[in-house]
Length: 215
Length: 216
Image (cartoon, rainbow over all chains, first blue to last red; front, side, top):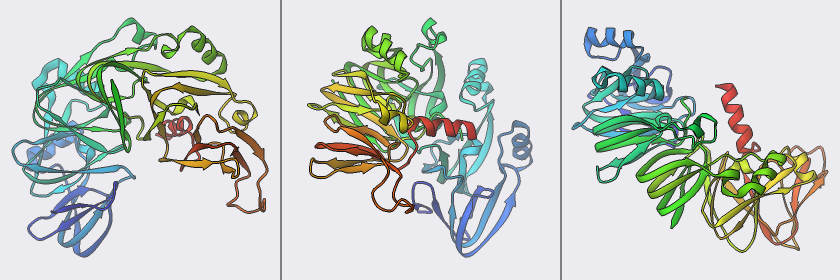
C-alpha cells in the first residue's frame, strides 16, 4: 500500500525510486527519509496536456516527491479520501480536488462537449466548469473534500441521484445527467431545496461529500 | 417505516414507503425512488406551529423525502447524531435539526432569560412523540447526565439539546474563582434527572455556518 491514511485529513505516502508521488504544491506537511521535491508543470501528457491544462483552467501547480521515504500530505484541513484505481476505468474529478497520486498514473483534461449543452449546463451547476480531469491507470489517488467523501455503488438496480454541489467524482461506466425539477414553490423559496439533482446511471461508484460547499 | 443511522457527518435514512421531514436542501445523495417536496405549512406541523415559529423567530425550513429508498443527508460537514425520542420531551434549537421521523411533533416554546443570554433567542423548539431525530452540531455532541442530587453545568451556547425533564436554569456567575480561565462565567444548569447534550464547540450550528460563509 503506497498511501496510508494517518487520520481523516492527513495521508502518508511511501515514496520509492520506482514510484514517485505527484502532489498539489504546498500540500507537503512533513517527510522522513531522502525525499526531494521538484515542481512539475502542467498535468503531464506532454505538450498537449500542458497546453490543454493551461487553456482549460483545469490545472493546479503540482510537485513531484522523489527518492526514498515517507511524505505526509494534507491541505487546508480538508478531509482526504484515498481511492485505489484498479486500472479498468479512469477516475473523473476536479483538478483542485487532487491532493496526491501515484506519479505512474496519468491525468488528462476532458472537455465536456461529449454531452453537448446538457453537459455544459451540468458543469455550470456543479461549479465544475466546462472541463474535468481524468485520472488513468493503476494506483492510489488522494482526493480532497469538505466533510469527507463516501462511495456510493451504482448498480443500475435502483435509480441514484446526487446533489450537484456534493458530487466529488466517479469511476466506472457511468452517465451523469442533470435533472431539474423547478416548481413554483422553489421560486418562492418554499420548495425542497433539491430542485437540481445529478441522475447517475450505469455501473460504477460515485463519490459524494458530506457538504454542499466547495472549498 | 423509517430508520435513521448516523455515520459521523452523514445521516443515512432507510425509507420504506414513508415520508421523512428533513432540513431543506440537506440531501447529498439518494438511491431508490424518492422524491423531495417542500414541507407543508409550518414544516408539516400546521398553521399554529407556523404562526408561533414566525412570531418567535425559530425559523425551520423543512422538506419531505417521500418514497422508498436510501437517502443520505449532510450539511456543511457538521457532525450528525441520531437521538431516540420517546416518553420525555426533547428541547433543542431549531438550527440543530437535520431530520425528524413522522411520529414526532415539533413545537415552539418560550425559553426566557436563558435563551436570551445564551444568544439563542427567546424561543426553543420542543420535540414530542415517539421516533428518531437527527441532530447536527459543530463537533460531536456528548450527553451530561443530571440527577436531583447532582447538578451538571454546560456553557450555554453549546447546549444543543437538553432533554425534557431537565429544567435548564440560568445561573450567572460561576463557582470557583472568577479569574480562572477554565471556569466559564455563565452556565446553564440542569437540576432534574435528564440528559443535557453539549457539543465540543462553543459555536451553534447556525453561527458556525454563517462564519464559514463569510470567511469563504
